[in-house]
Amino acid sequence: MNGNPVLYGIPSCDTVKRARAWLLARGVVHRFHDFKKSGVPPARLDAWIAAVGWEALVNRQGTTWKKLDEAARAAVVDAASARALMLAAPSAIKRPVVEWPQGRICVGFDPARFAGLAALPGI
Image (cartoon, rainbow, N blue to C red; front, side, top):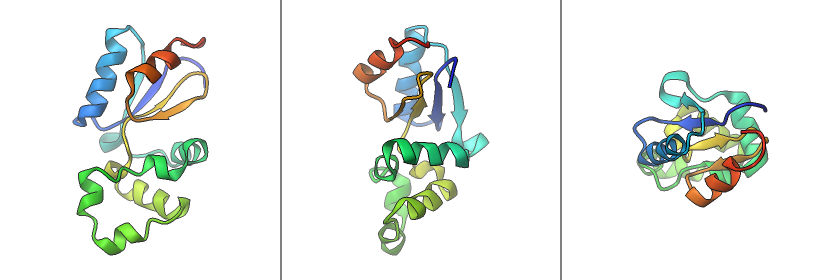
């Protein structure tokens, strides 16, 4: 991947708002992909699962997960079942997911990690 970071998420998510504000405050040009408007790109989700693991991507702290019945939560046991859930309910993805130009992918917002990744060549 070349160019600018791509930040995937939901605009109303507080963590996404903090991440976008952090990038803007530091002049890091990025593209925002809105899960609610554009959905979850299946090929990108596959790449994220391969890079960070399905466990890191499933947001077990969020409202979407908590609203699932016990059987639905118990059924998320591997990459395939997690993928199906995340495609059906994008809010079940921990946010934001950021694809950095160097090919690195991070999940969630950590200012120190963002600073390190934003400082790498390619941005």
